[in-house]
Length: 194
Image (tube, rainbow, N blue to C red; front, side, top):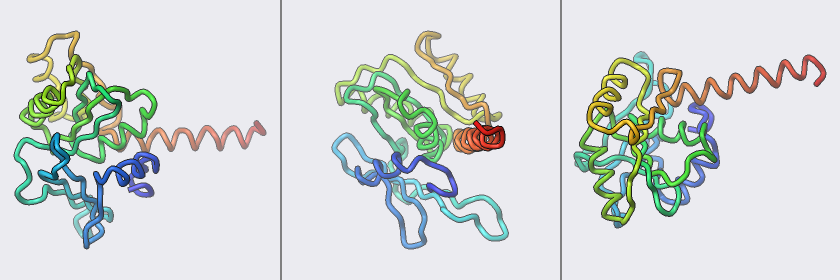
């Protein structure tokens, strides 16, 4: 996850410490969905190695996962925002890119584009006493993600919805691009003797 997906090691270490991610027998990353009481109610499974002959990485939801659940991380003691993502990798990539800027936010992977997962996240936050004031749309910058964002625009007031869609296709590509850009700047500075 750190080497291939370029997720910040501090983000991964924090998730390991909180028992939110694990590794299965096939070396897949497992992202645990926990309810308000800390009980695991589902999980996403993400391959860590490209699939032979198929390209891409294995992705799947663990059988019997809660239908409208999702991988969730609360940043801060009293979240006032819910940020939605299409996958746990995008969620962790976003957090890696925005590190210090993510404050008082419940970040939720919807396992795709599921409005019910957003509704569940807001309901669960309310049950914990959090007053959600903003919804951050951090879905993919593609046709399906843009359609989902437009649906959010039609459902939410303008001052409630925050658009944090990436400029790249998704937040993992955004993370990789930001690291590549930083590396190129450092190389140019070195070449110029700075």
